[in-house]
Length: 247
Image 1 (cartoon, helix red, strand yellow):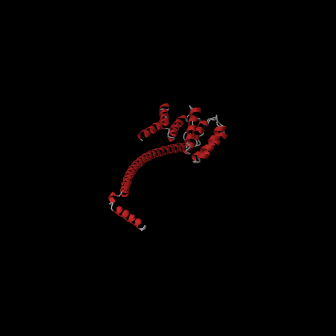
Image 2 (cartoon, rainbow, N blue to C red; image 1 turned 90 degrees about the vertical axis):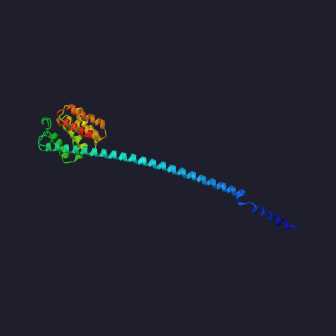
């Protein structure tokens, strides 16, 4: 008779469970509640992600606009620099052509420029001419070495201001603007009364502009226009200032 009792208990328990509707089952209710909470959390997370993505897109768009502005500024600066270099090259070619055709240089070597060729030995004339010929030929590195050697050997030569000036020109067309600035400044410091001083100051201003020293470069050009009024250098300085104002 004992086996009958467990069977009866199982039957009663099964009947009791079957009598509880699903919507009143504590376990099912708990599961439904958890499912609702999970769905709510998913919606919140989804909304937050969308907000963050929108903010990131706005940030990226702002950065793109900023970069485009920087690119435009760089393009404008590069255009201005190319125009400046083109003008300087044209001016250099013009002066070199005048020297080659016996202008102020006398005989195309640049030796007699501003000094009449007096007090110059044949040896120093030869050293100077070799450097100057290299400059005319576009061998700027050779010209730089030549003018530097000349200035070391003949620092007191009547040709020294010219050599120092053309050294600056050679550095400039070789795109070594810092060295060019130093060379042009040396002309003004050592030979302020030289015939090359106005051109040296003009090219000093242009070299400063080429390095992005806009305020300093403009000031130097204005000094050329006032200090050497009536000269070719002053006219070119005024033209350059006008060009800068129009940019």
